[in-house]
Image 1 (spheres, rainbow, N blue to C red):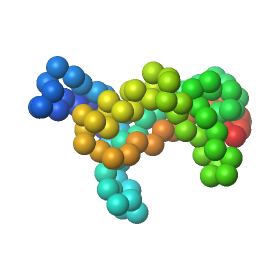
Image 2: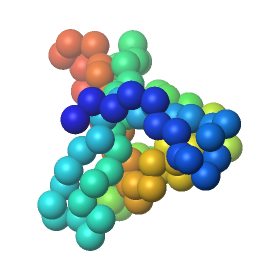
Image 3: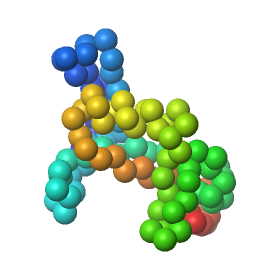
Amino acid sequence: MPVGLIINPSVPQLGSNPDRMVLDPTEVSPWGLLELKSTMYEQLSELNYLRPNEEEAKYYLKKNHANYYQVIGCLGLSGCEWEDWEWRMPPGKNML
């Protein structure tokens, strides 16, 4: 579901704009956020703001990067408990 500017009435001077609000009925808190990103890199491992977790076959945002603070702001202002990211890679490129 598309989302516009989110303003939490308790802090009206702050706002966030996640790309989508999504429903995942398998989650304890089913409503979350989705952030869409584009990159010209061929692999996610080339993105300097991601930290791989090979055991889980997942990537996590590094806590010292601006994108991490973007996520924290979106979650705090929206009241959602989770946010997923989707990367758009060049055609034919491997995500891992």
